[in-house]
Image: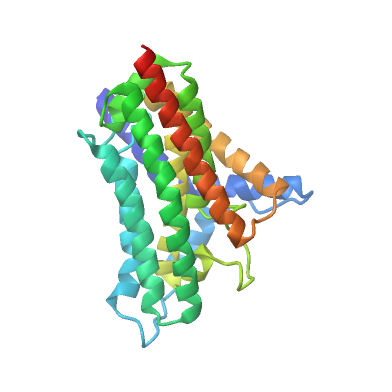
Length: 303
């Protein structure tokens, strides 16, 4: 009975919370700008509206274009099932699942890039090229953070890692890893200062340009997948900063909401970086993650 309740909470955090997180980001930005802003539940309404529409497909596209949003959403959902979302153990936990977690996020990105390239549009191809560059640099930091967690706990499963972190506590190397992960979180979710999800300027669009030709339910899958990716990466960050939240669904939900508020504040205080600066930002994040790994290795050697 207790396991069933925990799994229910994990499913709610993974499936029901994501649109609310985006609504919180939008509301925080609106309050910071002195506006009322959209309702917190506007994301759910937008998804319902899109699901009722009929999709329109170009004659130049193939099954790759139609499969892109579905594969991206499914990959993100599968990655979320590998995290202990307030249940103590993940819905799908096994030895080495952290490697699959990283590759599932990469698969979702690859699916959206393939769908963009399938349109034959040079504009969407530009967005896919930028997404590939950002993703290739961001993944370095993600893998270094995951390796740091493995070294810190000696575990290869995300569920066991969070349990081990809960017992450790007070590790400065993990705080450096959390800072690197927080920086990469903005890039992985196409947020300022890396990308602006509300922009309509052709020369600055990255993620949004890849979704221009999607409509109806396909666009709903794209938007829902992006919201779910924000929830998944936020849960990973909260679990790293506050490992006990991996067993407390209310605490985890509160932490994810706090991350959404922080993203809104960051986007209210910063402007989007120029593209050459984005590379420096991501390399800096990877360097910070590398320092965290080196620090953890030094601490383990000293112990």
